[in-house]
Image 1 (cartoon, rainbow, N blue to C red):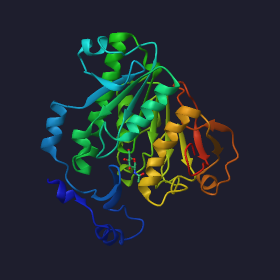
Image 2 (image 1 turned 30 degrees about the vertical axis):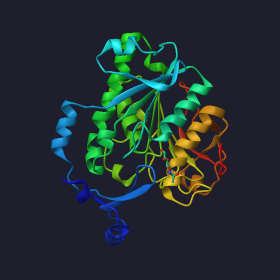
Image 3 (image 1 turned 45 degrees about the vertical axis):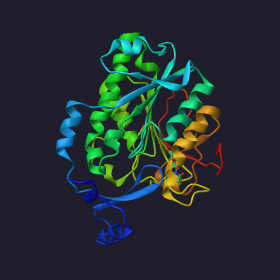
Length: 321
Ligand SMILES: *[C@@H]1O[C@H](CO)[C@@H](O)[C@H](O)[C@H]1NC(C)=O
């Protein structure tokens, strides 16, 4: 299948397809694509099976390490190549944080740099940026089908690093943005015992019937930070945070702006650990902004964070929110 068959960039298609019975699952959905675009995706499109087979045989994802000793020039880590780990600045005494970008994005998307710098300014850490752009830049359904294998690759790498250096999985945290949330979940699911997974705005109707989505069992502690399009329709994690109700963010006029707010608030909480959610008894309370339960910090850099439930966090429009 060709990319052009799958990505309809006109909203006309979406509107026409959305007209049937309101309860029916829509066939065409709008999804954030890359940095500034929204595209319409046909959920019944066939993925590119030939490409998927090739990816399964030869996944060419890249893992790039940054530490305080090399904050800007990454070192490439290679699965099953122990020297690539031993000769790098990876330090098993420090917390490891891995970052999985979203659809169309790559290692050059600035969420990687902003989250990386927030960590390295706050603490000694091994920051591993996953580049899965060869797959994330395919058509949407092919990318969706490949997500488990991308996540397994990252999980296997973390496990390999643990074997080579002795770094415990209990000191590792995987975070992912958008489709990358599900890469992060699958990474945790591969290895069992990973300390923490953070899904940054994981919701899309694509995942309603797909068991490969981010789940609470993917790590010891799993959290999701919802900022666009999810007002409690679906829960994913031990803790589901709904920022300002989980849909439109203050100061935003587009859904991409609200979507991006998930990694922007996460990076801000790594720096300041200043935002707190209040627990809600149910989704209706969350929507009505009536949550009065106990408080839990949003995001932050604590690899051993714990919690469970639905939380609402209200923020301002400007950094650090
Ligand atoms: C969203 O974030 C990306 C970086 O990941 C950035 O390039 C883009 O400009 C942002 N878009 C909006 C609308 O804020």
